[in-house]
Image (cartoon, rainbow, N blue to C red; front, side, top):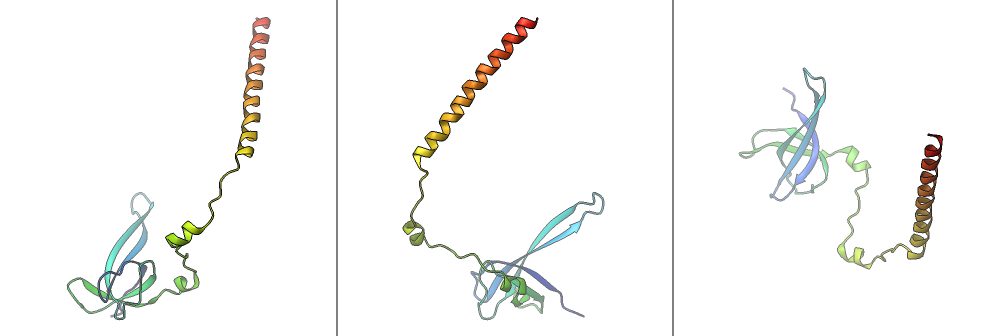
Length: 136
């Protein structure tokens, strides 16, 4: 009988030689015909502790290795290999980067026209009310 192969993301790599893989599936509800996302977590055997949290891997069904492990990590997914992982910025690098402050002069200039526009709108509204009163 062929062994099942699933693809998912490693969500935990704390245990020795074990990773927890989150596998998401989409299926259509039989009555409402809407797609539903279902996720399951599997404990998978990682012999060399080579996979880390965030990796997308393929797992294969195998014989029971322990009470909860019935899956083995085959390889890192090809889609994950092609996509670049976002680089993590250390706190030191974030502190060293110059912080950009909004120039105060430009903000003040932008506020003045808004205030003028509001005043003009009030004048126009008052003028319209007066013309309505005159026509009645």
